[in-house]
Length: 117
Image 1 (cartoon, one colour):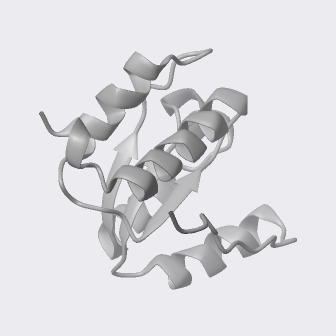
Image 2: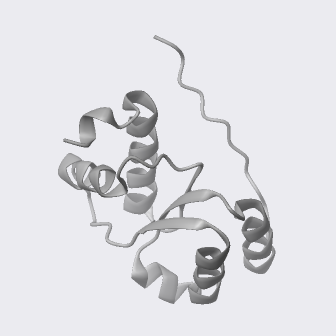
């Protein structure tokens, strides 16, 4: 079995700089976004979300429960269908970040074949 490596970058930006730069980076990509509606409202990201929706192929997971279970995870994977995202973005707290990490890991390791049935 091969090693699992996930390249990453850490960006230090203001919220405005980040929103502008990330829109340019994500243009025309297949994106899986994890962000609760309450986070979008609290962080004033509706305009950014609308711009992203117009610039990219966006699938958003809005309903992320506190302390998600594997049932929640499998539901999200099934909802995503056969489309593998090019980019996964998670904005929010611990459950949101954990769910995104778990989805990325399982998508990579299984290529989602076992979640479609």
